Length: 270
Image (cartoon, rainbow, N blue to C red; front, side):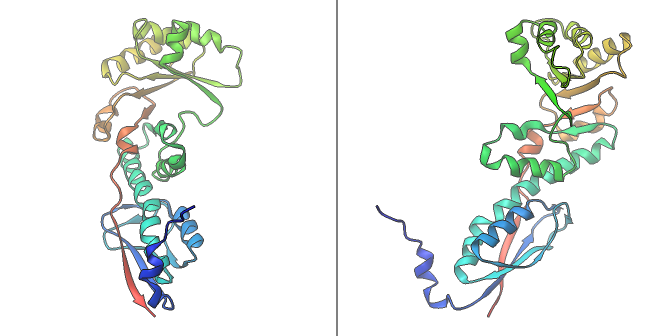
């Protein structure tokens, strides 16, 4: 069996007796996230950490967020293996924080799209969302999310909620899309069927307003939460503050946020 050779063993052979100190610096403003995972990776490589900022720390261009030392091979490996634990979740945290700030505490920001990420990075994505101040779950306690496919299988919102009526310990979150019935009919059935969160997942402000109106007419506005989703852009949040909505579920614009730009520099050799 052939074992791949790490060329760094040969490259650094003559200088492996030396110790190298390196800094990771941010190249843009944002929020730091993923430091725990970066520290664990550095520890596994045998590096010594001298300085590290905490997750959630606001940073500006030029700020040093991590300083560590090790032998030359360790430092080279760290550049390949450690930066990603910080760059991506920090970018997500920055986007989540922007959304939360724009919501001004009037609407809860949720990003449940982390559940659709590959298993190996789910924890990083979710951590970024939560570090930015967004929620990773639409309901904090036990709940059942009844999406469009449940409604399609059962044939209606009413039938879907009837199927889970016996699960009394779970809050019911149901997706309203107006595919099978008019969305106001779905909203009425959702309220009558005991749903706790009505997720208007069409991206249509007209649908959102219509659902709000029917819920108010039923005298049920204080009993349920209204959520809104469907390609929501962070820049549109100020406009959405004018609508009757409790929760915004923002996926792509948070999950696919650009990386926090980082650089790693060797700063001392001894």
